[in-house]
Length: 246
Length: 322
Ligand SMILES: Cc1cc2nc3c(=O)[nH]c(=O)nc-3n(C[C@H](O)[C@H](O)[C@H](O)COP(=O)(O)OP(=O)(O)OC[C@H]3O[C@@H](n4cnc5c(N)ncnc54)[C@H](O)[C@@H]3O)c2cc1C
Image (cartoon, rainbow over all chains, first blue to last red; front, side, top):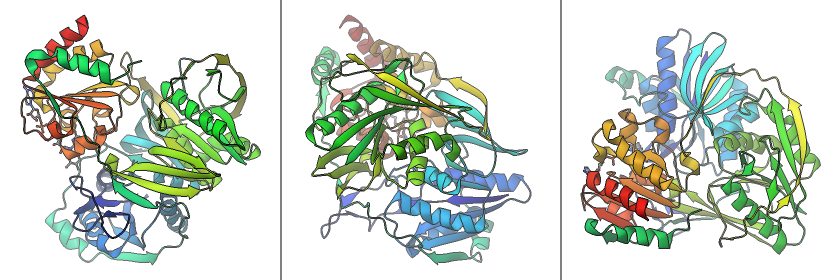
């Protein structure tokens, strides 16, 4: 079974986002970057599947600039077999999805995993776009994933609760916890990742004309009113004034 | 010509509140702009549909499929795609939900429409749509200026546009046109469990959240009782679900669910930046914490300093009387 894990590389979850002076976008210098937390879950599950099944190979795929290579190498250290980077700065979900589709059509994967969303632009759409582009089965958010005869057994979240699904391959899945525990690379993994190759290709799709024009920091200033615990009626009165309940 | 398809959701034969708000918003666009046409759709099975008398449409198209495995394949959308194409739809509006995310991501690729999510504002001027959307889990805002490209816009729950309209009365019954298709999906549902007797977290107007300050799962009753009194849903911080005190679908934040209720009450939660990322879209935030230094106190509207084991039961009692 060939598994492809698509990863986003995003500012660390503790990052303080600030605005760049010189243009109308957020500044991303000085920030620490990580593999998207949801993608990290997807990768961890892929590695677990590889470790407990024969004939499973795991590839890692990322659309982004060269600066992301140390993090791609970390994915290799965790146990992925090979990695691909599409060089460029994507401008929309659709553009990233088209790059993944393009690559996956040429290199046929049985299972494509990624996080349910990237925590920078939060669209949560890429797995669905890719599934449609490849005409694969599609589920998200997937909380449990097991390889069984003739496909996969999944537990997914729905609007009304949870469902257990038998899903045939090929499939694209958006993942979230508790699908797996995040992993830390072992020394052996780190050593062997040094010799694994990260193949680089140029972006194939055109830039989208549906792009962000400006970005700004969202300052919601909260009132920060302290209510003495001896006088909780004050809180109830204040809430009744602030909020229109249906 | 701008043809807007608004997809609305039902709950027990009634429009969901979020769908009502979206419909009122879309209708205003139609009222204020010549050459804009509104079309109503739903993918849930509808028996009756009432909308505000002002909404300029007299029917709704109801797409249904047999063997509906959560819209898991392109084939499950064939009838939707051909109908939208025949109607020459240029824009699609819907509210965020797990099902809608599955459907509209695929429609975006199939129809070759752009897709924009987490919308904060939308204006239509001279045939051009101006969007702003929240990014970085609400820490920042992105703007997209003036486009007439066809697109699918997914609105977060509670989206009202710039000014809140009170006009949400369901006074007009409209005709339902059913379009069904048989889709033999290769996937099958083995088992489903519904969240029962609980107010759904993502739909709730009030949410009571608890964190490690609760000390142990045996104390959850305090939170549960408080939530019941307020007709609120319950939520928790990540450690609480990691420790299996509460199910994973209740954890809010960067790696959990993002909520935007009118009121969020956080009990014994420190307000780590990853937690805030899931709740900063809330209308009013109340923090109950015994530590003035807790980061959450800087991100709250009201702060009650003290022991949650005293304050929460006391508040439960007071809401009783109120
Ligand atoms: C990549 C990543 C992703 C993450 N994603 C999430 C996420 O999605 N959601 C999330 O919540 N966290 C997330 N976290 C974890 C986050 O960093 C915090 O560790 C977590 O939110 C803390 O949970 P807490 O507030 O319940 O616990 P604590 O930080 O331990 O806070 C407990 C609070 O309770 C107060 N308290 C204690 N006793 C009482 C009492 N008797 N009365 C009143 N107050 C009391 C304390 O003063 C303290 O402020 C993530 C972390 C990482 C690294």
